[in-house]
Length: 349
Ligand SMILES: [Zn+2]
Image 1: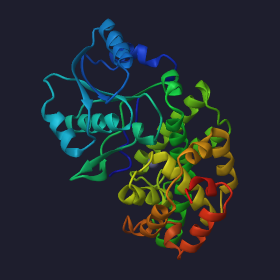
Image 2: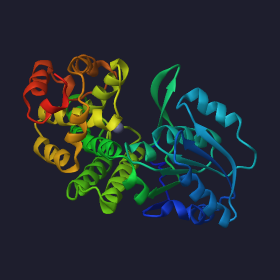
Image 3: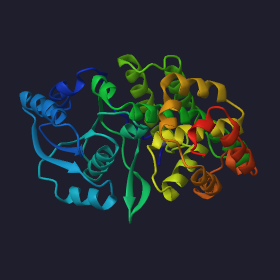
């Protein structure tokens, strides 16, 4: 991708009550007829709020669909069923629906409005869609949303596990950026300094005030969104994803019960920070202050699955240098899982 062709969201609202103003935002984008894709099991009041607001501004919901299945096949199916004369796609709810909506909008060359009702990962504003293709999870190239509408009150009311998952996914930028710089020194992977800086800055802004309240949700949403922008700027997932994400991807493949993306990633981030010898104390404190450790300890991970995932992780992405490429860290990781006072609570034996 040509990194000079950067398309970033031009309309961003991150505040309480934003869903009830959806009509105003849609009008500002000159939208008249939209398709709404929403999550399964989403409380009906969220759709009613946006529908009412859209109606008041003369914007029609031409089609409303529930995303049952975040697959490439289902997304292309929806694309072929799109009514005529649509000028926008709105994704409402959690991860899956937003991944499908983002991809459908990308296929249809239509502006995409992301309206997440929780902040469990950075996918609501990233340039890829996480979809299955032939039942295998893939990151498929898409475009950033044209608008990001985050109702901070709605996200604050979402379950605490989702907040913790968002914190874990954000924290991973600390190890991802370090892995990126290692890759530059070891194998010459080009680093985009601005994207790395943006990625770093977003985490530290949140770490300075890691509180689960309206302001904390605003900071988390902003940070996750800017991370998506950092990926778009450099045309790679490097600013948001390093060795910690390799471990989480490996777990998704072998775990009997994969957990929330950000919970897996957050624990892996802390573990990788030990290997990288940077950020560990700060990450430990962040996870204490946000309730992340307690959330993971409520339903600990399986130690054997993690051991298998750690063995698999370095070979998940070819030509992707991380700290895991720099020697055999297996015994060190296993020791940390058993002995580190924070990590020991995260595993079941
Ligand atoms: Zn992630």
